[in-house]
Length: 290
Image (spheres, rainbow, N blue to C red):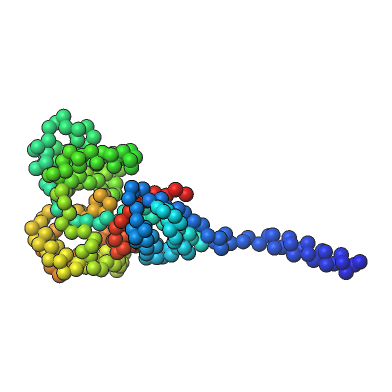
């Protein structure tokens, strides 16, 4: 009888000890589903999209445990760690369209605008040749973003009106006044991400800032040299998904097909940008449904 009691007691104690151990939830997959929003979907484009998304995630160190095309128009992505999903969710639906644009001088645009133009009601536009505050030559004015959808509608309406002469694009990053800059670009890009043969990031040993270096293919190298030669003293805009990420001033013709961007992002931001550029544009558009 005592033996039985000892056995029962041991079982009860073991049960208590086991229940007190915090099990790792990472052993269970956490999944998210992406729904394609395009009207026309093909198996080939779905497979291509799934592969691009998977490679993006691998490149930033958040390799998914599983990426599957669950059904027509639906991609399921699973992670072993819930934190991975939280950190990369914004990467899953970005189109990843990277382009290079020549810019247009703001004063040339201001001359052709009327004071009752809707641009003046939507923007803070400093006067022609304004020096206070010091403006980029390619920035028409500043836009106070209320919501992403409102800013997207605003830009879409502008580009419909001026599409033959100008392309408008808001900056990705806010300025000191928490406003977005409205850039004036030529209507078509002169290069895109397909012309980039290699992209990487590194840390400047002196400043501690991260930079991105890019190499162009043969055709891109020729075009880059031509455009930089024509635009010395002007800005060239680097645009991702219709947002201006960088607009450096060209100091000299750049030969050899190399370019560098520095000074405005962290290591993680640089890694994300490289993953987007390196793996190319998604052929389809998606939204997160769960």
